[in-house]
Length: 381
Length: 172
Image (cartoon, rainbow over all chains, first blue to last red; front, side, top):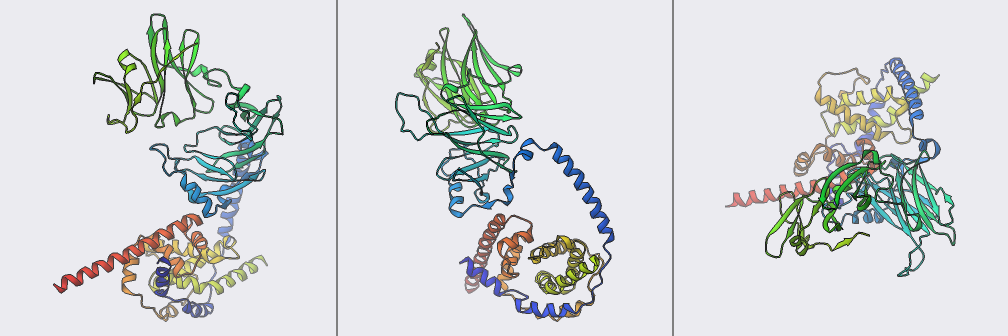
């Protein structure tokens, strides 16, 4: 239908192509009065000097990666085939409210290959990225604030009851916070994987690494000028404590609950990559509450809650991407508590514990499907 | 010698492309304005000859002509003229009558939608070439073209429907 429409439009051309030849023949005989271009040349020379100076400044100030590695120009990379574009469209299909990665599928580019795996990348509307490796994984960082993303893979069949080892990883680091990646293996050796560094609007370096036969991967580190900025670990390489790499000198007390046996305090501290770690402290004990999250992700619509038993008190703490939560008691009464800065921290009474919990939106309306039982208490060691 | 080379290159450019640029302008404006547009477009080309692509200069020239036309609509001040005695030849161009419904539907579109359709249907550019003329990415141009086609079809349908309704009302 639309091709017929374009054809109809072409037929309605007020100056048909056949006339262009005649126009050209007429114009060919026009006398040309060409003005001098010396002024323009001076301007161009000045512009050239400015460009050279700016170029030198840019080179001096350029991050090390630009000098040490070739950066792939995303805008000039090969556009993805319609089949791949369709895959990127599907990333948003069925995504829950607030969880849509908002990829821009039509800007998907084929940016390169590592180890026979092709990498396609698309920007997202909020400034992040989505990526897919051929015959492997993919993912999204909708907001562009994830400093390091790692997908772990294994050729082994899962063996229930034993810890699984991984022999392949892929993922990306943000150039804002990292200019190198280091992978630590179970024999204590380290490798720097091959990287594909992509220019704006992607601003990320991608890796795909498979360990030698018989070796397992334990940790992946994002480095900036050889300093560890963040890490993702597995097995014995696990980073200790609820706030690895957080800047503890900048920690803030968010809330506290007084008990007969001491004070339970909720702390947050920034990470070196603008993220946030949250944990609970009781005496000398630090209890994980929410994993350290990249900037912006702390307000994602989600409820990740746990009930901690501390000195006989039941304390509900966790991530809350909603406006408030409400406890529904068995006798028909209810109690509401606000979520502040993506967090909830409250001492439960027996009626709360026996009842149900649900999330409320900014208008105080219950979120459909959010009602469920209050989590069972975790007994602290 | 460099100046002579420059002049020779420009004259070749003008000789080969002036007709297409003139047709582009005539499809969008009056013969008088089209003369100015062609003159100004080639004046820019002469001054920025090193930026004119050797292999496919037309999208670049159309981009300049488009901006020149937009500027001309904002200002009636006539600038330095590069080409003389164009007016008579332009007036001699036979006009192809456009079917009224299509002209109205096209006129109802936003300028950007109209331009991408005309670049493809009238200037015969590919979406990639049209993207260069419009100063956007090829992907963005394809999307714009797709939407413009749909909007044109929609406008034609609306006009046809309202025309039908009018006929029925008149019949009553």
